[in-house]
Length: 146
Image (cartoon, rainbow, N blue to C red):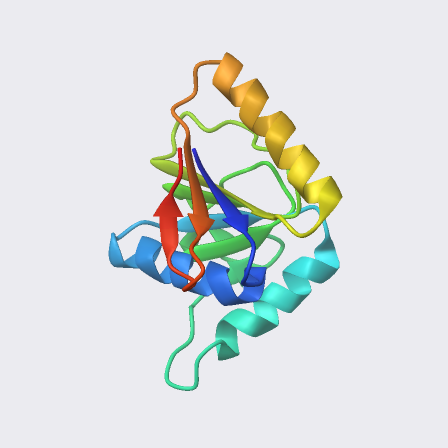
């Protein structure tokens, strides 16, 4: 479980790069959120996030969800048999046993998000989960802090 503490960048700036690296590994991904509007925004953004590229993806509610390399969902299911799970917006983890990696991305500028991430870290740590904490350097690079 890797926690990503957003301090200088937005979710829209960070998530596409992480998804791209996930796809480079040959993994499929699920992006789970609690807010349908956020998923709508991410859906639009992933098609246009760079002028020379897009991230092929779909919604869990659409046909052929199991064939999507990146799937956006509010559900706890993993219909595309993803190896990577991206938790945004404080969504629930669900079953993580079949995953290679879980990314928990939270906005450190939002007090409720920060509090939720701290509580989740504590709970997972107490349960014996293998955790890593990444934060952004002043230059915007990711540094492993724990």
